[in-house]
Amino acid sequence: MPTAIKGTTVAELIQELHNFPSDALISIKDSDANRFLIVGFQAGSDGVNMIIDDDESNEDDASDE
Image (tube, rainbow, N blue to C red; front, side, top):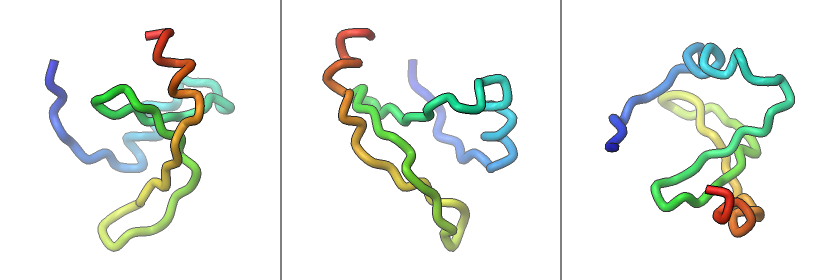
Protein backbone atom coordinates (compact mmCIF):
# COMPACT_ATOMS: atom_id res chain seq x y z
CA MET A 1 0.00 0.00 0.00
CA PRO A 2 1.51 3.36 -0.97
CA THR A 3 2.19 5.82 1.83
CA ALA A 4 1.47 9.50 1.43
CA ILE A 5 4.51 11.71 1.96
CA LYS A 6 3.87 14.12 4.80
CA GLY A 7 6.08 16.15 7.05
CA THR A 8 5.71 15.63 10.78
CA THR A 9 6.08 18.27 13.45
CA VAL A 10 7.91 17.64 16.72
CA ALA A 11 4.57 17.89 18.57
CA GLU A 12 2.98 15.28 16.27
CA LEU A 13 5.95 12.95 16.70
CA ILE A 14 5.81 13.24 20.49
CA GLN A 15 2.07 12.55 20.47
CA GLU A 16 2.54 9.45 18.29
CA LEU A 17 5.30 8.12 20.55
CA HIS A 18 3.53 8.93 23.82
CA ASN A 19 2.19 5.39 24.38
CA PHE A 20 5.54 3.66 23.85
CA PRO A 21 7.95 2.93 26.73
CA SER A 22 10.32 5.84 27.34
CA ASP A 23 13.37 3.63 26.76
CA ALA A 24 12.09 2.12 23.47
CA LEU A 25 14.66 2.21 20.67
CA ILE A 26 13.48 4.16 17.60
CA SER A 27 14.61 3.10 14.14
CA ILE A 28 13.69 4.18 10.63
CA LYS A 29 12.94 1.59 7.94
CA ASP A 30 13.22 2.46 4.24
CA SER A 31 11.26 0.94 1.35
CA ASP A 32 13.90 -1.81 0.96
CA ALA A 33 13.43 -2.81 4.65
CA ASN A 34 16.87 -1.42 5.59
CA ARG A 35 16.81 -0.12 9.14
CA PHE A 36 18.62 2.94 10.47
CA LEU A 37 19.04 4.20 14.01
CA ILE A 38 18.47 7.82 15.00
CA VAL A 39 21.77 8.89 16.57
CA GLY A 40 21.19 12.61 16.91
CA PHE A 41 19.33 15.76 15.94
CA GLN A 42 20.38 19.17 14.68
CA ALA A 43 18.60 22.36 13.80
CA GLY A 44 18.07 22.88 10.08
CA SER A 45 17.06 26.01 8.22
CA ASP A 46 13.55 24.63 7.72
CA GLY A 47 13.10 22.32 10.73
CA VAL A 48 14.85 19.56 12.67
CA ASN A 49 17.25 17.16 10.94
CA MET A 50 17.56 13.59 12.24
CA ILE A 51 21.04 12.12 12.02
CA ILE A 52 20.86 8.40 11.24
CA ASP A 53 23.35 5.55 11.15
CA ASP A 54 23.22 2.01 9.75
CA ASP A 55 21.52 -0.49 12.04
CA GLU A 56 24.11 -3.27 12.20
CA SER A 57 21.37 -5.78 13.05
CA ASN A 58 19.73 -5.46 9.59
CA GLU A 59 20.70 -9.00 8.69
CA ASP A 60 19.24 -10.41 11.93
CA ASP A 61 15.95 -8.51 11.61
CA ALA A 62 15.33 -9.49 7.97
CA SER A 63 14.43 -13.04 8.96
CA ASP A 64 11.93 -11.77 11.58
CA GLU A 65 9.72 -9.97 9.05
